[in-house]
Length: 293
Image (cartoon, rainbow, N blue to C red; front, side, top):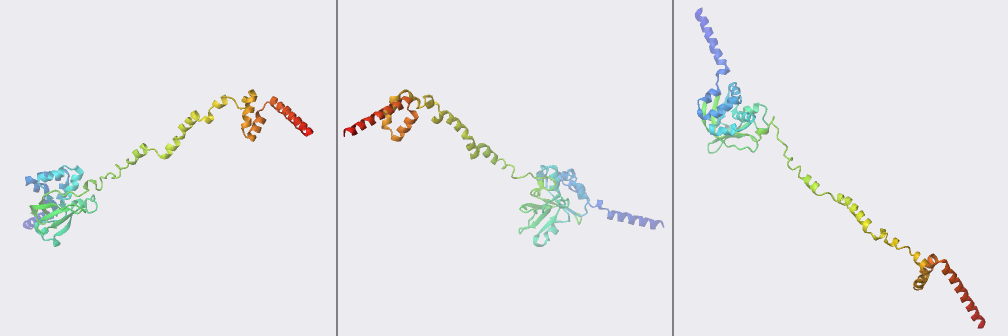
């Protein structure tokens, strides 16, 4: 009876150990065995990404050595987490499995894609085995380079975790402006360009509108039509009134219509009486000549 109870208890313990996901792996302890990857390992702990990796049962981590990890540690903290999660593939891949991929190219889903912060194809890795046998990784974003070469397999525990060393960090284009960090508008720097042109060169309408002001002042000062000079010299009617004979002289050279109009308007009363007497005398002479004839 006692032996039967002991057997049942042992089976329960073994079943509990087999079903415990926490016993699968610990990425921090695993990388801690290799001093070349201490910077990458510390970044996983600082960004709390190591905890998420340890909760997985199947994972592949692409790590970089301390020299290459400086390209990640120099980024802002929120971008560091995004870039690091690009190096965590949500499946198990060792060198043998990668080499057996059909057509030697495929897309790999990363932890960044599962975070919901990736845009377009930013959360996918493009894996390609070149004709020379070199395996390369790169962001699946259009135009992104595939230049992170696989160096070696660091550790593997089939089929839970595989750690592979790559040559350079994989940084998707635009990762710093994705999802929760907005990018500034690109047509701001050119917007002020037209403003100086408008201020420096007033429109033609403004010039035409302001032109009459000085013109009016100049006309009032210089135009002879408005000058009081001729009026101050006295009207023409005053001249003949004083100098009667002078007016009669030029009247003979002037046209008839001008003389009659000038005489009618300007001749004094005395001059008109003289003309009547002269006319009467002339009539008498003509009558006398006719009598003689």
